[in-house]
Image (cartoon, rainbow, N blue to C red; front, side):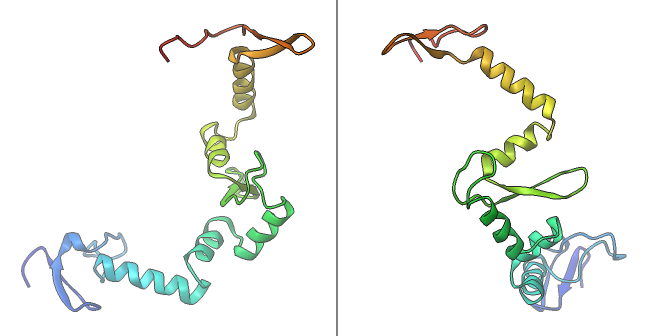
Length: 159
């Protein structure tokens, strides 16, 4: 067999080394099976041991299964624990200890991640929004006026 080539025992083909996933556990630095065969074996194992890749992912990453996920979501009324959007699919967990906190929608889960779960950063964002968001103020029954915030400008007429 030529240099830079490797045989895959599953598909029984000789392929370039780049077609094999890398690993630090083998002297060759490559897995035994090519990427498509390697992936198929992983999917088959997840299906056989866990009933699917979702269950495998939930158990490996968060220590819960789909049953626990569904129970937690039912406790939340079937909605995102933060904004109330129906059908959230993302497990929120404390990055310090790994404990699951709730089920969130994509945006709320990403938002917490962007703020690094830091309450002072979130409080700063709330303060910022309060100071820059234009608000309707009732000045007479049925009459409202847009109140200028402490910071910010109204949008330009061209926007």
